[in-house]
Length: 271
Image (cartoon, rainbow, N blue to C red; front, side):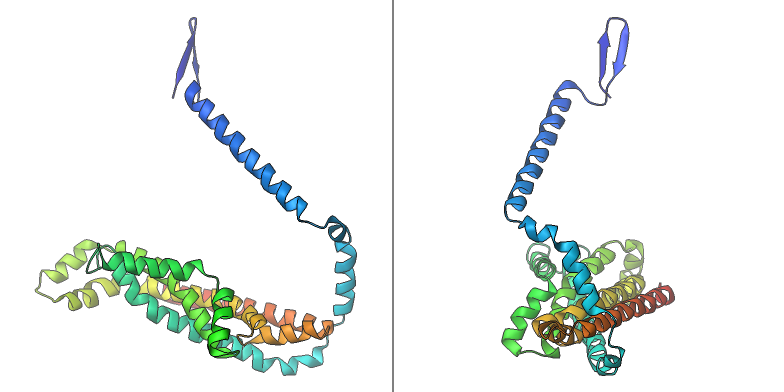
């Protein structure tokens, strides 16, 4: 900690003069950037619409009330489709992410110079593209429906699961691996008996957690034609059937709450 001496008095300061000047300059630069961004946002905002937002919101809420509960019977199919999209997409994503995680981990990759960068690039690419973007592209390729939603969920899950899994692989106890290798075990046997048992709880926890996230993401993929309850929501909005929209919102909320409960119980059971 810098000390400044003034006469017989020592003054303890958090930073010296040079560090304080750099800190002040950095703070000023960030403040200027924030003001500049706020100015751009303000110029592109129609403040008349913002001012009338409370009235518009209240009017929309009145249109959505009361919910048409008789519409519930038509939503069971879309809800089940949404769960199928999330579940199958998670399974497919985990199946693709698992080998990539072993290729990306420092202690299991066959080549740190060639294979590991490629595996990391694939994981980063998967994480960088939102599931809605994946769904938009896949609907063009495969057409609207559940298949596009399943693959979109899978592609998005690969990067998430792969990153957490390869980090778990890198944190395993190396002594256990060395003990298995010292018995003369092959590389595959070392992975089977020395690595996989150590990462099994993390693998199960990551998979369940991603499934919980995918339930939420699957509810909106239908807005771009990728199946599930989102398609029913888009249809209700397009026809201005607001009493149906409120029912769909309640069903989505119930589905998300149920998936959260199931995932919490599953994680508690496997971890």
